[in-house]
Image (cartoon, rainbow, N blue to C red; front, side, top):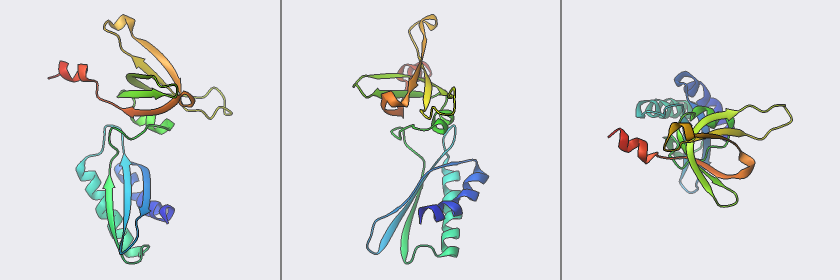
Length: 165
């Protein structure tokens, strides 16, 4: 069912330049919940979310895929949405992220984007993290493999926020 819904959704999101992160249908009883998560570089505005919601609702009503009542929620991911794919690291390139490693440590820095695999057999997603020091000359870049990572999420660089206030 989700793949059928995604096929209805795709022309709408393509027109708006949005990526579909998740389509899920759940719940039971009298009303199911259809949840759609979309994103794009720089974030998704309320107008785009409303357009996706209206467009998908019209398509869903015309196709009558879900029998009975359902609730539709169209949203963008929050800061705690995990970055996992090459597309995620491309979409959020230049943003501040927190990397939690499997062994329990964590680093924060600027996501400099995905690193392309040297050959097709390497399916591991890697990205470059710029760890900023007090002096720019002491900055360092680390290539991080998702095999080493428990979770990567967007974060707020509070020192950057305080400089701009």
